[in-house]
Length: 467
Ligand code: AMP
Ligand code: MG
Image (cartoon, rainbow, N blue to C red; front, top):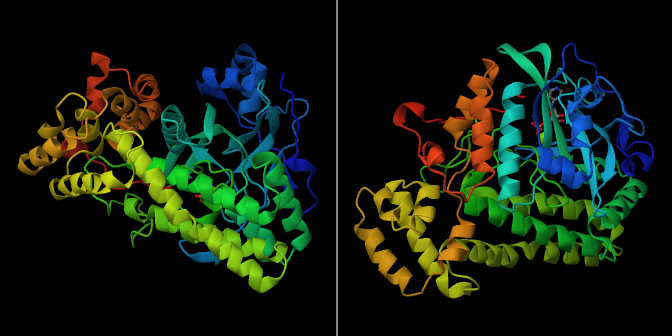
């Protein structure tokens, strides 16, 4: 039993298409996030039971659900597409958690919708498990993100060059409203809808904002914080299109995302990102570009045009200093230096340069600072040793460092291995990986293999959307 309160479905016509999920033949629960279920005030036993699983698979609609596919547009790799929308997902509805926070409950992989275009509306088990484990690791590290409530298999085959097991992810988010949602109405000249959407976003995410410009300021602030947190974990989103940027500031749409093993700022994994547009070091600039698209959509709501353009531009330009200080805070903490400020910037940059030259492992260098094993990550530690002497003169705090640096990340090769086993009906590696990365600071010896970088033959060089 779930109490839905569907505020998005109360928005005017044109925001969404009313569409039920397509039932599947043999729904089986693969993973259930009991911590998250409790956070949302949902009954774990009910979710695990036949009625719960039927809902998670799209086979039964609980009372109060009003499934909709949300409309949005978006710039994909810089090219504008006026109509995208939920092509393989439906928003079942919204729940209000015991603490008053409102969450979307979305089924991803739930069948065709009016926005499916050529797609089959389905997902296969691989990307479902990838999003499940990666988004929950991000949450465990305090990164604003959508969450994973459950994964089910469908008993049906999905074709992606080869036959693969179908699956659904139940995704939980503060909302699924994207920069592309604003673009959808802006390109259609629908000022009434833009105003309604803005009002909805303000009420939901930024209740202190008193006008569209205020809201934009706050989205810029949240994104600066989120992207700085990605950078501090070596996370590469992979598809930072405007339809994959949430106005809540949450990380959304984990597709060909990946964490770096060996550090280099130009690292890209996504098979479709051939120009490196969304490489690790590009992400802050791309965020600015995306936010400028949001700003452009809001200008018609901001009064006299010339003044509105100036104000919107100023708002977007605030990203750089906000990001810079968030980045310093995050990397400062990684070095055990809290509230250090600009004076440590050269120290951080020097370390990153040494790491890049030797392709040192991003995660292991930082967590190795806590126990003096970082130097082992360098084939030639001379430069690192010089750096470490300077660093120690700042008196790093071990506790700050331990909290900021995960011992384990969902390394690509481990994610791929977990998916391959799950496809072969063995969920043990997935469950173990999930447990280990959602307790990223617990140094259990039985998890030490999960902290190791890939051997050459295990290395994953490319990731795929593959949904
Ligand atoms: P994304 O990869 O999340 O950025 O998706 C881009 C667009 O393609 C969105 O509108 C998705 O809904 C749509 N899409 C992706 N995969 C499928 C699929 N299998 N069936 C239908 N639409 C899809
Ligand atoms: Mg998307």
